Length: 253
Image (tube, rainbow, N blue to C red; front, top):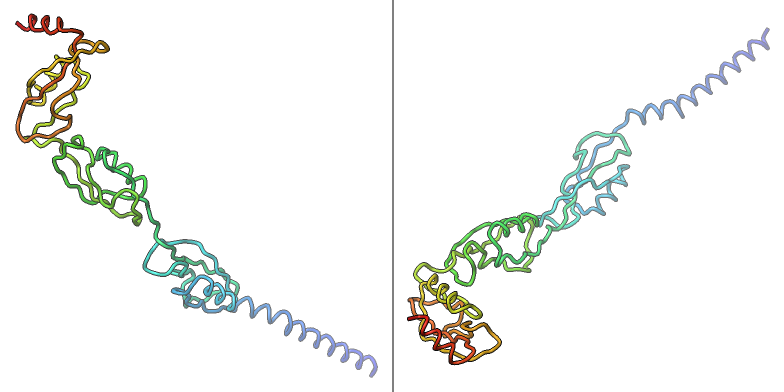
């Protein structure tokens, strides 16, 4: 009887010790780990490399999830994080990081000679815009086209910035521009001068068998010249021979 009691007590002690070890070494640590939390540190303003190291040393994982382009802070600096600092989270939690990168620079396109609408479209496609529009009379550029821009073509500027442009209004109303007359018939040349509010001056003749008679070979004022008052333009016209001059004079009578 005493032996049986001794065996029972011994078995009870062994089972108790086993349960204690199981609870202390396995069940309790697992329970504690399940409900334990740690505080997220503040890593904003730190470099990406340093932030990753500090997170890993505290049992976190750092992952870049977003980028902001700015010149306000150094490149690869942490500008935001989630979870935010001070929050209680489980160990091993991933902390998402937003980092800074240098602002994107855009090469300014050449707008001179384009219509204002074409210039606007070209800039929008690059993330730029027109900031200020000036107008001026400019005989070198047709009405409605860009005659000047700033910054100039090829300059590097930040994305989102605006350009200044000057749009030509064409020839000033009180000025006169000499048209291109070379190669025109004398009749067409006279018409072009009339439209430009100019007139034909002295006509000289030059024998030329390769051209149709009465084709303009030269003009006394270069085409494109802008004048402040109306005037006459002398012409040199082709003929086959002297008989052409006589015939032409007879036809004009």
